[in-house]
Image (cartoon, rainbow, N blue to C red; front, top):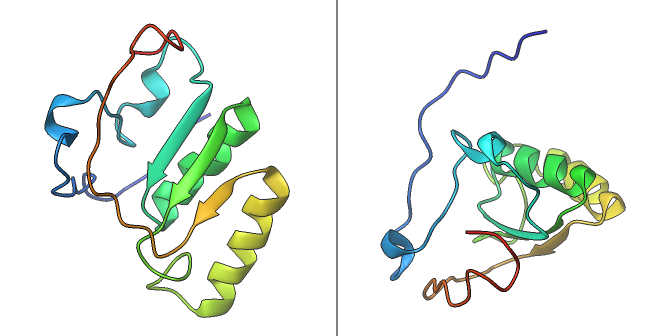
Length: 114
């Protein structure tokens, strides 16, 4: 089996605290040794939504934080609506028009996840 996923690197948003908090990207997300009990996904593009759906299927509680009012904002609106319905059915929470003001990593021992 093989996965070919061509594309660029994840763009890191300028969010205060992100540079000192442990975070994952599509490049290292599947290298985890254990399943995170919960996962926040910043972004509403295809790769972000793929990761959200996968980790929801694995058993994580997933919340997608979308800056815009819809998913897949660069695609046809019907595509975003279809993906939103599938994510809802999978148990993924989506927060639209979200603004992340800062990131803080406050209790690394609380959930056993770095």
